[in-house]
Length: 145
Image (cartoon, rainbow, N blue to C red; front, side):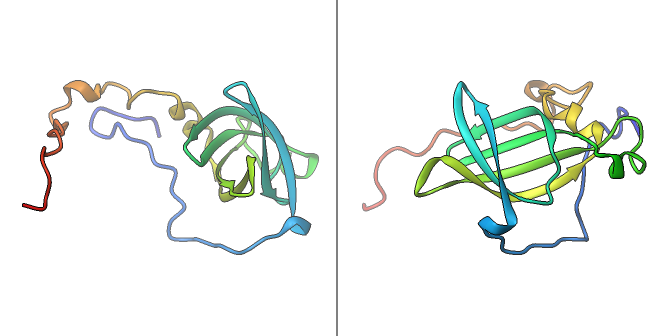
């Protein structure tokens, strides 16, 4: 359902179903990508399908990746003509600075991929939103008297 003026926000939810488990090198594969001009590797569970990368963000020790899955013959019959996407959140390995391990893997809708690069929901501008609030500056001085 496309966004409307009364419902401008999009959510691709994974609730209430939620799973988690540990995985090791025997259960993983390595994806090599370039982020901000630097080569990095992402360790991901073997079941995460190949995908065409369309979105990356590196924030401190976290790497966010998203893209459209590349269907194999088995999956193609189940997908609509737009396909599905993948969203990964990976954390930097402490002992390997340019390697990240997947902490979160989620299948996402094609609409979600389109919304990832939008600055705000269609028809809204965060700077002029009536709900936006200016953050006060931090207090000056110490707390010890």
